[in-house]
Image (cartoon, rainbow, N blue to C red; front, side, top):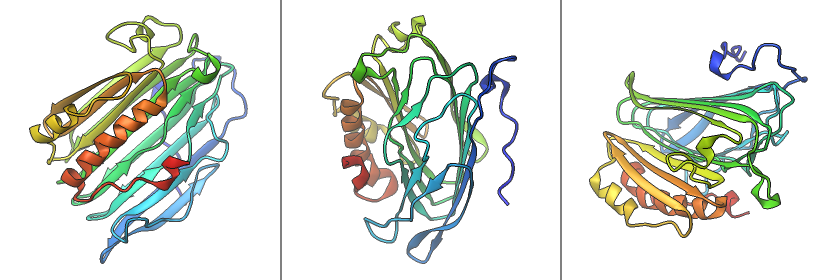
Amino acid sequence: MYPPLPPLASSLLPPAGAAVSTPWRAGLSLEYEKRGARSVLARREHFGPLRVQRALYPEGEAVCHTLLVHPPAGIVGGDELRVDLRIGAGAHVLLTTPGAGKWYRSAGARGVLAQHIAVATGAVCEWLPQESIVHEGALAGLATEVRLEGDACFIGSEMLCFGRTASGERFARGELAMRTRIERDGRPVWLERGVVHGGGGLLAAAPGLHGQPVSASLLIASPRCDEALRDAWRALSPAAGEGAVSLLPGVLVARWLGPACEPGRQWFTRLWATARPAVAGRAAHTPRIWNT
């Protein structure tokens, strides 16, 4: 049986007395192993509306591509979703989603997505979901924890669009609370927390979103991150919006702010294609779903 979800951190819980609609409570647990030359999805369990499609091998047996599917297509107030990934020693996995995720307007309860990723020594996890659209009035909590062992490599992206920009909507009310923790051999290498309030000053402030509706990060945690890779990233400029690259010990991160998701996706794809051979030993192979 899949274990019950642990208690959620108080910072991500809905406020006392908030109205709660009938929520989805869903979990997905995936374990990958390397068997010979093949990376395989060795175990999967789920409850509620979280699924995966079959494992795909568009670039050969060494890399297992997996599509994570959430049939309701969005998270509403009161939903609690959890994803657990375990990547065994030497395995290589690329996970993405078939389309944009959504955080819908809430009547008062907070929706929560918790993501837990464990990557064993010699393994590579590429966690590359497509963007998430945060609707006006959404109350959302997003928590990501990554545990790396030895020389494990993690490549992760996150793109958030505040408001449905195509229809002129802006994030005038609501809240998104976020936290990310990455550790290697039990020691933290990346810690980040933040709260974006709808209509708040952070949306317009220069140290915040600087008036742009889309904020995104691409992060690589690997012992192979170095100045040469940092400089290669800095030589690539986004076609629109503002991008910046920083190197910390064992962590390379790119940030982007822009008017729409597409130019950010294009820039991140170029950065990923540049870094993948250096940190994962393989040329970039773009998932076909990104082109649909």
